[in-house]
Structure formats: C-alpha cells, structure tokens
Length: 598
Image (tube, rainbow, N blue to C red; front, side, top):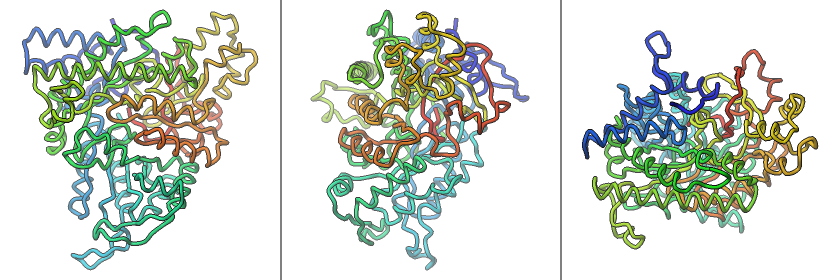
C-alpha cells in the first residue's frame, strides 16, 4: 500500500502526474502512477538480465516510491510508460552565432519543453549589440534581444500546462553586453521564463575584491572592446539581485576545475535551477531520497539509506536506457556520459526529527556526513553496475584509478535538486532548504495556490500542551515562531525558518553539501524583505570563498510573482483564488523564485 498522502499531495499527483483520458478525467490512482513508472524503468533490466530480475527491480522501485522514500524527477513520473517517454529533467543546448543555429536552439527548446524538460543556455558566443553582421552588412541586436525570442517561445509552449517552462540564461562576465544582461529583468514581466546567471571567472572575482579593471571581449573577433572596473560590474550584479533576484552567479572556473568529462571541452551552462552542469546537448535525470524517512528513533538509519542509494542509482541508470530522447544530439552525448544525479529532499524535516537547528554547526556536520555517505555508496553501486553492463563510453580510467575506481557506469552520480512538486507528493521539505515558514501559501501550477502548514510543529505543540487554534492563527500572520513567547524557547530555536536564518548559514549549508556533490547544489539564499545589498555582496563572496559552483539569492517580496507566499499575501491574493486542504496538509519548504521546476 502507498504511504499516506496529504490532500495537497493528492492534488499535485492527480493534476501533474496521473494519466488522463481525452476529456481530462484522471484514469490512474496514485498506486497505478508508481506501478507504471516502476515497470517502465525496470524494463531496462531485460537488456542485461532475465525477466525475473526485471520483475524484482520493478517491485523494489515500486516499494520505495510508494513508501515515499525515493522519487524521480517530474518528467519520469509524467512520461514513463507512455508514448512520450521523455524522462530527463535537465538539458543544456548550445547557442551558436548564426541565425540558423539560434533558431535551431529555439526549436530544440520547444520540443524539450513540450516533453517536460527544462533547458539551459549560454548566450556568450553571440556577437554583441551593434556589432556588424558580415553577410548582410547589418547590425547585430545582441544576446538579450535573442533571449526574448526564447522567452516568447517558452510562453507559447507552456509545457501543456503540466509543468511551467523553465530556462537558464547565462552570459560570461567578459561579454560586451554584460551590463544590459545584468539589468535585463529590471522591467517586470520581461524574460519571465528565465533565471539569469553571470558566469564569473576567478580573474573577475579577484579584481572585484581587490580593485582593477578587466577586458570585455567580442566573441566574434576575440578582440578586446573595452575595459571596465570589475567592482562596478559586481556592484551592479548585487544591486540588480537585491531588486529582482536576478542575476545569480555561476563560478565557471570552479565548475570546469571539477569537470569529470573535461576532455569533451569546457562546460558553459547549467539547467534552470543551476544544479545540473552539462555539456552542450547533454541531459541528465535526477532522483531524490527522502531523508525524513531514514531517521529512526532520533538517529540516521545508515542501513536503510545504503539500500536506497543503491536502488536509486540502479533506477536512474535504467532511466537512461529506456529514455526516449527528444533531440538526436542529446541521445548521443547522454549515452556516452550516462550522467545521473541522485540527491535528497526532506533534509530540514530530518533535522527536526534529530532535534538539530538548521543554523548550527551540528547541522553542517550532519549535511557533510550524509552527503559523503550517499556519494561513496553511489559510486560503489555505479562501479558494480559497470562491471556487468560496462562503463560509460567516455570513462577515463586514468583520472579515476587513483581513487580506487577501475570502472564506472556514470560520469556523475550526485546532484542536489530543488524537488519542488515531488517533495509535496512525498510530504516533506524541498531539497536541502530550511522550512520556508510554519504556514504559507504555495503557487503550484498555472495559478493553483495551496495553503500549507508544518505538521511536525503542530504534533509537537499538541504533545507539549501549548497548541491552540489561536496560536496557529498568530503564527500564520508571519510564518515564524521566533517572537512568540507562548512557545517554549527550545522549540523556537529548533523551528527556524528560511528568513529567520542569517544568509551566512544558508551559504555554508550549500557549501557543506557541495563537497560531496558531483554536479552542483540547488539552494536559494533567502533574505528578509529588509535585507540590504551588502547582505547579497557578502553572500556572493562567501559562496566563492567556500567553492560553491554557483549561487542564487532571493529577497522576499522583490518580485511581483513568486512560488511561496507568507499568509499576509492574502491581501494581494484573494481567498477565493486559493485552494485549502480539507485535512491536515503536508509541508514542504522550497525555492521561492518564479522559475523553479521540479
């Protein structure tokens, strides 16, 4: 039997993942959704083993999904066992400097979005605005203008209403149009389907901190156009991020230092939330272990986590074999690298069950321990699969032999994804995010809004005898319990929310997970509404110092639209437009930026 699903979890499952007939009527139960997925993914075993082995895998996959211990990314839940068959969440598409190549990228993006995937682009190869177009003697309009074409196409596709279209747009800090890029989203409703990040180099970061100028280079000619003070550009990034949440930073040199497939060339872009680093045309499929399910009697159940890691790697590797790729080039490079991304959700809930405050050294230590455990066991499983099925074709034994791996099935094994909607299904907190609030309103899909509250707090309040409806109403006004003296001090210390936590702890938590994450970590550095630009500056510098691969900040209320709202948002969002759970809702915190697919 499937583990208990909250009302909001059922709504999300039915609206996004369950199959429907021609009239839009749901024709699958939750158990049938998971059975469909388990059977389709396990069928890959038939290529390498027996029918009995495939049936055994199907049952294992089914059991860990119905127990809400592991869930794959949304396209797998939506499309496995269907004619669409596209199961990957993350794609990166190249954008070369010609009209034909640009619109080929738009076409490929549209096909990927239609199938449920998200796309990332580097626009750094496009000639700057005002540059000459040799073939026509015309004037180039620049990367930002073409980004609007991608944005409009995304708006039209809408991914069938099941999953919002999502893009990452990246421009190198040394592109001549960098100022226009940084300020591109100052006007509301512009590039609504893009997250923006500046690819900053070590040279840029050093000069931004110490003073000095750097060169802006025309990618068409390779020649310097002009020089700018790095500190001025950095200040502009900080100010824009304070005003609108964009752009974030991608630490492009750190990414390429850690590139496990560097012989294929440099990495230029990531997927929409920044956690999946990919070569041009490459895709990756993700899955997340629910850490709240591996805490028993106040301790980590290492044996259970070990089994889930092994099953998760097996599941994700199978996905590659049964996947129907939407673009030919994507199939070619994905099969050569077999990149997977096993990660976690429910981290904040796990900390609550352990009695550990999120903003504490103990929490950082637990994060490092659990991610090291996951990565080591995932690599061991990848090696084991490689022994029977073969290493990924681009495997370079010389770069792995010293670490004890003479074979590997997958170029990467770990990623920390945002897990927005799958964490609602699992009834737990998103990714590695802290509680967003004790209660809040979530924008889920195409205008659907769900009221959510934290059941762990409510259960503890009842157990300790300080629960009342009046108290819960008070908490709902701000989402935080820190100023409420009716609540015991030790409870307030444990139940810190995203905006109770100083930005430094957010960054340090991301860095703790990054140490043992092959790809990258999706983490929003949440800031209070009253935060100042210097809070963002310090966060960016700390993330670089701690060797994160990128960073996204969000000051609450700085966008007209966001995914999560505290209850005062009722003033702007009429109650008649909200969907309320009629039974105790499941909680999940998460990413508040508008473009945050799961």
